[in-house]
Image (cartoon, rainbow, N blue to C red; front, side):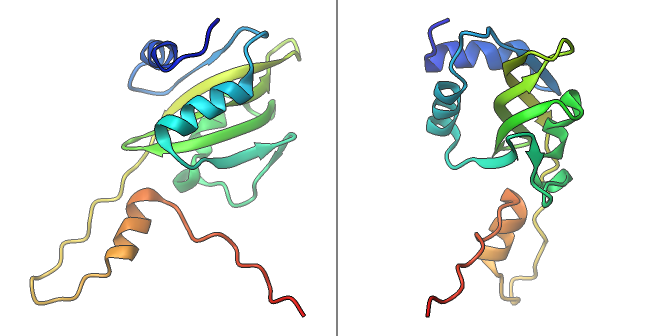
Amino acid sequence: MELTQAALSELLALLGPGDGYMYLPGDLDPHALTDLLGGRYGARRTLVLHGFTDPAVDESKGAALLAPFEDRAVTIRAWAHGDQWVGTGTARDVEGIERPVLVVAHREVPEPVAVAPEEGVDWMERLRQITGWAQPAQRPDVD
């Protein structure tokens, strides 16, 4: 399978607008798929790395992408896109074989808080609520 943005669009269309996932052919390079999705959706969030799930993952950070794989996810990267989570990586199938995967899941997008015209609006906070992203952990000062 040749990976192009058009091929990626076809795969995502097969999954449809709701929750869905698919195991992809074993010869497909999961890193190339991650790069294609990154080119389309921007910075990614790592949910699972080497079989270990990030403890901060919850419903607001893409946990719905992990549900189809139970504890078989090996590496899953995620992107928030409108009212959908999009993820890719690798997971073990029911036979225990590690294969590339593509997964989508519904994402709850918080409604913007209505504010009166005279009230100040913290636009950065509203943006964080809508995207679900947080500032990366800060490195401690080096002595």
